[in-house]
Amino acid sequence: MLSNFGKYARRFEAEAQTYLGTPRARAVASCDLGLVIALAALDLPAGGEAIVPSFTFNSTVNAILWNRLTPVFADIDPRRLTLDPDEIGALRGPRTAVVVGTQAIRAAAGALPIVYDAAHAYGSTYRGRAAGTLGDLEVFSFSGTKLVTSAEGGLVTAARDDLISRLEYLRAYGFQTDYESHVVGINAKISELDAALGVLTLETVERAARRRQEIARRYRQALGGVPDLAFQQVDERDRSTFKDFAILCPHGREGLMQRLDAAGIQTKRYFRPAHTMRAYRGHVTRPLPRTDEVYERVLCLPIFNDLSDAQVDEVAGHVRAYFRSAPVA
Image (cartoon, rainbow, N blue to C red; front, side, top):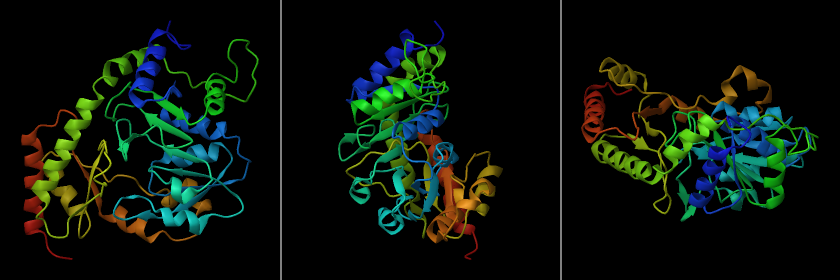
């Protein structure tokens, strides 16, 4: 059995359900497809507006457009690097159908349905509650860059039984056992090969999350004395899995990137804002100054489960040395 929800796909789902504390979790072939069918499960009217941060991965916006919804780009909180809740009230209008975010925003969204792009968040918690139990629908990624991985694969959780039932149809061409499409579905089935790898790695999530916390703390301690260098803020009541570790450079990041690259240390720029991409320019209606400013300063330092303390210290040493010698802009 290589597909069609075989033994390992069912086990993958069962282990995730136990870990998250919800029976309403279903495996999918990828987070991208999970986002597409999660929005489809809400059966929103075509042309409805979806409030979404521009500072996110392309998949978030693509899923909105595949559902014939209109993205309305929101600015971010420059401390947390996530959707500013105040933007929801400012952008909400008669056509607003859904909020698509990457952090807990229920209070700001009110009665609007919320879909969380929780791609990075398997193992994260908010006020003691597991990510996956917070929104109307949440979608995790288990691609190769995540805390735990199934090579390619994803998971969708839902707050209600009717939504999870609709998802089961949507991920399997629109039918279950009778080969008659009840809804317009798609092939979003996870393969048994991916699910089997996921079964092997899911059980390591707590160990991986703890290690990522240790690495993040070590970076913060080592770099805490660098003038004007800032970190993404995470409330002490919550837990981030730190799929990435972002710093905000005081005078732009290019010089530091070049210094680290010369030392054989890989970095990345994090998300290019969606409102600057050619595919989405037709949906840009207002400036997003905080998003633009953060993008020019943000840089992700190496973080992965097996990163050693010595390697963290080496990276931090290069960062400190650069800022001691860097000219002030």
